Length: 476
Image 1 (cartoon, rainbow, N blue to C red):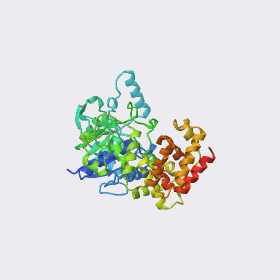
Image 2: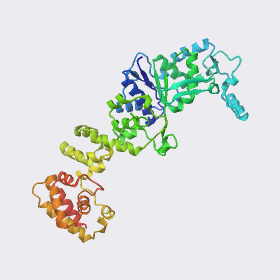
Image 3: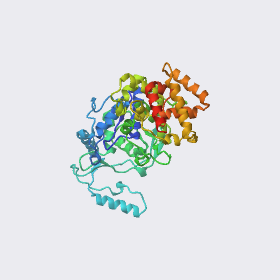
């Protein structure tokens, strides 16, 4: 059997981390097994349709490297791959059910259905539409909803590759809507038809669908279709681990993480490891390693807590793995404005110096601005430092004057000779590195932190280093 998986998002807003994981796992399975990955746009909920959302979905997947073999911008023999363009296909399958006496026009108004629901509540029993099924429904002409007529009321048992053996009784089976009054199918109907037409062998989606699977199985039987493997992924949980992750918990669009300087390698790695591991202590996986090692059987059944700090750590690790030229290309849009006129070779040297400290690409301006323009003095960096705050103004001046003299007299200006001079200063002043080096670093960068001091001063050059120490002395 050739594995065929799919991702079928709805263009109703931004694409968040849960959406992407729902794309990543079936993509990994298809790539690992040499199968096909299909992208389908489920846009039948026109009331929630957001203009531009489809392009955002496609662009986000492209950025992450989640490519598709069939779907929008690619084509394929099972198209169209947008549901609103597949109306005739749904009508054909609906007619099959009508001809078999397994679908009927819903004659009730929404108010009448609500009345049935309230009656069930009053009787303290679950509402089932099949309890109110009309005896002689009108011929369906498309102006009314078309409902599925469930006739085999029984217990269903199925195997979920993630959740294991599951079952549900007849109390969950009901006559659900297949096609709405606007002529568009419901998700419950459309995805089953589409998966069958497109030859999908594995459906991998969120845990919120698990309660509906018995209804899907009853429809598969009515349509005489063998269901694909139906796998449900555990929820991505809020940081406190107590509820499903939502917008109120800080969940952002994946596009926002991209803007914030998260690498696609880190995002893929992070999402794959939320609810899955290969049984080892490994934490960083390349795309190829994920494809090689992924399996549905190792997806955990419990929810995975969303930990943005882990994402930032992982992103920093991936930044360090990049070749300098590759990183330089990726940070094009992140340089501070004052770097616009700098030589490429100088900017690369700056980038090389800060690469090990970056957690996101968006941190680049804050970490590099002082290499391109004169920094603003910020005495709170001294007064807020527990060690430096103990020094008197005269002691600060004495240390800075000694540093200026030592550096000004230095012959060759390299990181190594600068470090030697700094070490000599430690001997002559009798100070600790945490005091002397911190003071020199602040006086030359006025930044809360910087790379290794010798490397920083070497790149700033002698003239700027001495001039900045002089300026710090003049405003003691």
